[in-house]
Length: 272
Image (cartoon, rainbow, N blue to C red; front, side):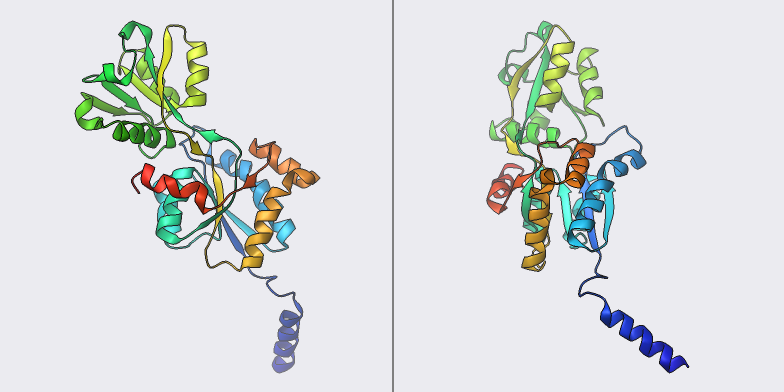
């Protein structure tokens, strides 16, 4: 009886389509610490996992993190089959674990340095000996700001009297508003809105532009699977499920093709 049962089970397994039981692990890093509940953040990206699972016809497990260092440790171990994250992490994944970008968000990102007009600071050259406010050390805004300073031959620790990190961007700008810091660096889009809402403040300089968030796959992934994932992402605006997923993620414009050449320059920019 047991032999017949095992033979029937084996026949059932062999009858399954090839790869049907192979699960993909999708890693997502949000890029900046958020004040939202982790459950809400995960809910934002669950439609992405469901969409890929439906298109690829295989289960996709989602793992979302707000910690860049945690994601980088996982990437070094080739833990993710597919990873969505900010440009500095994609560049690090390329260098340390040979991940390959396949698609990205349209547009580019940069940081902006903001001051209160009453400070008299008109450029970073006027900020020597002042106090610099930055968001979380791992955030893209902080990394872009520090890269701008390094390439301008301004060593932050010696050029400024203090480098003060806050966890969130709004807290960084609030520190500027109350006089805790003299210059604050945040993402350019966030800075633009804040300056509009706070008369008496202005942007004095901006960082270099970098490409946006990207999807990257393991280098050893089967070429056909990699192409299917890439095409599924690019085709998302063409289906109802894809459009619903994009709306949930706040990416109605969809995704565009990406490759190593887009992110290789960031290895030098961020000193990786």
